[in-house]
Amino acid sequence: MKKRKWFLLSLVCALMLALAACGGSGSDTKEGAKEGGKENGKEKVDKSLLPIEAKNDGEPIKGGTLKVGLVTDTPFQGIFNWELYEDNYDAEIMNYASNSIFPTKEDFLISDNGLGKLKVDAAAKKATVTIKEGVKWSDGEPFTIDDVIFPYYIIADKDYTGVRFDSDFQNIVGTKEYHSGKAKEISGIKKVDDYTMEISFKKISPAIYSGGDGLWGYAAPKHQLKDIKIKDLVKSDAVRKTPATLGAFVVDKVVNGESVQFVANENYWKGRPKLDKVVLEVVPSASAAAAIKAGKYDVISEYKANDYQAIKDFDNIDILGRDELAYSYLGFKLGKYDTKKGINVTDPNAKMGDVKLRQAIAYAMDIEQVTEAYYDGLRTRANSLIPPVFQSFYNDSLKGYNYDPEKAKKLLDEAGYKDTNKDGYREDPKGKEFTIKIATMAGSDKDAKIDQFYIQNWKDVGLKVEYTTGRPIEFNSFYDKVQADDKEIDMFMAAWGTGTNPSPMGLYSKEAQFNFSRTVSDELTTLLNDIDSEAAMDPKYRGEAFAKWQNYMSEQATTIPTYFRTEIIPVNKRVKNWNIDYLHATMDDLQNVELTADEPVKSTK
Image (cartoon, rainbow, N blue to C red; front, side, top):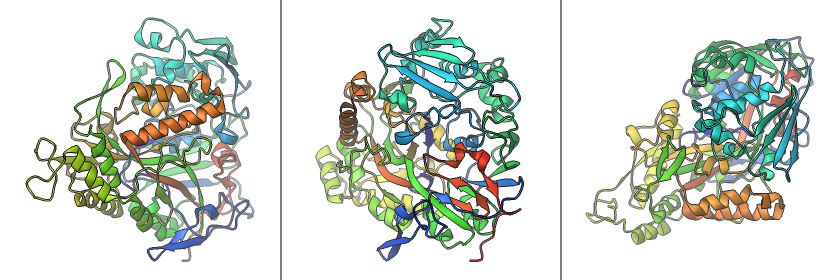
């Protein structure tokens, strides 16, 4: 189901997820990851040989505690609510107690195998959602259609503090009127009975089958939240400490920003989990490899790709890998978000407003060398804002911005950025000193080295680039500054998780708060609307619409894709039934996970 996870991370490394490895115990079709060819004297990992399942034929113990390490150098926010959360760390935590009602099948389309079933009447511009009967929340309260309707009222409320009241959500009839106070109810949301609702849309496109067009894919416990003011939800215990869940596990104890202990949900609709507990702890990146070797954790989330070499020979883990539903990018600040009107406003006089300047910055980056030197082939230069995992929509013919410093210099000359005082740095077209402020996320020493590598790349073509605030920024402060359009940020390094819906509407539309570059144009709006139009019900038309949008974004260079990513997860040898295949992911069937020893296995290497 659609999960817009935002990874606002530093340059290459903290841009998130991915490590990788050779070795492992195999998958359904492969005998484990092996080293591929060499580049610059280094071994490259053959990503196609990374297993997707941790095979373990050992005899399981009864119960036990799964120990999970979440690699991050900053405390997690602890917003355990799908309508309100803001970053991938909280999403990773919530996956153990998820309120998702729509799983996905082939091509990331909504499946009927979950708590909810979707029926679409495209001609009438309506959809019907029906939920399973007899299901209970973790606190024993019955799960009804009111819990599926309630999230729409949270997001559309005038006091909503989150970021999801975008053009996609406003496609539901009546949400704008309810949000503005002109209506007391959302006219397009109708309760049919205790297990059925009907949704009316302004238009229906193919996106609805992937969780788009405004369809929301999570339930919220109305009985627990209804008496809390919407503006107070994000600070409430019901969100941060004791959220009721439909998932396999229930939040039991929280140490703010540091750890979460879950216990088995006795009311889980798929059956009580075989594990008794899950304990998730924050692990600093500098100590993650040592913790894995010592057998401190069973599963590691968000392990950094540029630390692959540190764990590749450990014999106590299987290292699983898959193409990630994400891409890393360099964004340019071109305007502001108008909070009163709820729209992005592009500044025609923005400092980074010259398209040739932005293109030159992209051509000056030697991304290929960084991927080879730091990522062992586990990241590749991105050419598009659609990841290749979406095969039907990814434009593999798009060239993107390969390293070409001479072309960068030529573009800068044409745009009027020239070194008039002969100090090695270019002045702006008016002859004034020109310094670009970049925001990156604080991380490891390797991250800092990669930052400096790119800053040197830009210096080589005559551009002076310096850190915003003088240094990389702590994660939470980083995304606060980016979202708030801090005047000291000219460009920033970040990454997006797309979720299972490939539509870019929620990230780049006029109303999208996630449109951090704040770029808006009539042509962009038309291209986005075409992707999610009624005409796009024709697969050929939609494919062409995706291609046109990708070409436009590449030409405009307001958001430069930098890396496509391989998501890698180390799993301890005592874990049984852990699979990361998108069609059979363990996170959808956590009740089946078992352990074959009382404690995680330690590495002998």
